[in-house]
View 1 (cartoon, rainbow, N blue to C red):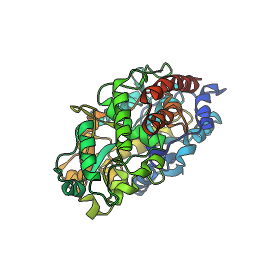
View 2 (spheres, rainbow, N blue to C red):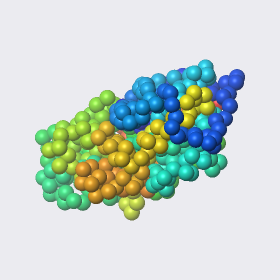
View 3 (tube, helix red, strand yellow):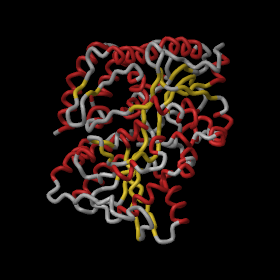
View 4 (cartoon, one colour):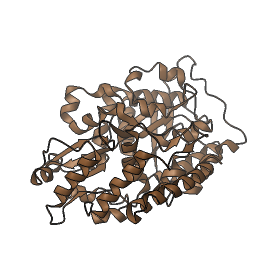
Length: 439
């Protein structure tokens, strides 16, 4: 889900989304692939052209380098593509009959291409995968349509609430007890902000729609409620009257008006998101694993994390973000693409994901050695059953669109203060954006 990271910066321009939704206009769609052919995905030869997003390409490069070093007759060529250009470029290539052999796509965008029937049906291959039942259920769900698989998870990128144990101690809080409800977040934030000297209890990226979707929506999902309902292509919005949404907007409003959040939060974009927390001046901040993985070990030693809590506690959730593999129908070497996918999903390769700032997508990576080497990534992966991501073709027009309904509603509610009016307007603007996304 997107951009700096999938959920943080995949702010697709309307023209990009329009290109993706125009896939159905292809004059001569590529024929289905015979993935059940004898020997498919075994001892393939030639070259596999692999398009990966810039965000996940560090992990992609690691996998490609290892694969090419051990496969003499089959080579994978990695092409990183800017996140903001990915959907447009891929849609254009597919329409032109010049698709890559393999794609690593933001998992939230998998349904766009599945809906328009341009990804190969991989059902028998996925069902035969060793460890299929260990794959991230949320990410795997985004590859399905009518009980068929049109992709497979590639790498995970999940949202959690990070907190600074040093600041918790200084504020008289138990560093081993992160907040489990909105009331506790507010109470802890007040005590930490009272430390003064530029220290604040909380921080959030108020000018980054993708980041806010990644870090705010899970609190709502933890209650079992959603903002979007309906199968892909038939979505409806539940904004006005959505109690967990109102409670969540109220939390952020209180954090802002009480001065408990970094003042930079109002203008924070994905370009600098998390820098204040990494500087040690923020008590709590919802973020991904990547920025923390890149921080000095001495700073990481001060941190704790928890999944994002429901308003009243009792449940948690995380945005099941990351990337999925897909094989376009126009692939020239689908057998080689599947051979690489099988390699990439092996436990040995997946265990390397944290070194690139991500989490593995299979839970059986959680060995004692992995837990010892990557304790935070292991703790996040242990919560994969709490992961969720909307299965929709309108996520970009509703949540990721710059100046779109999600950011406009959040801005009006949190910074202007009329939550009821913001939600009323949000209901109408979400409905319009859904219609646009399905047009």
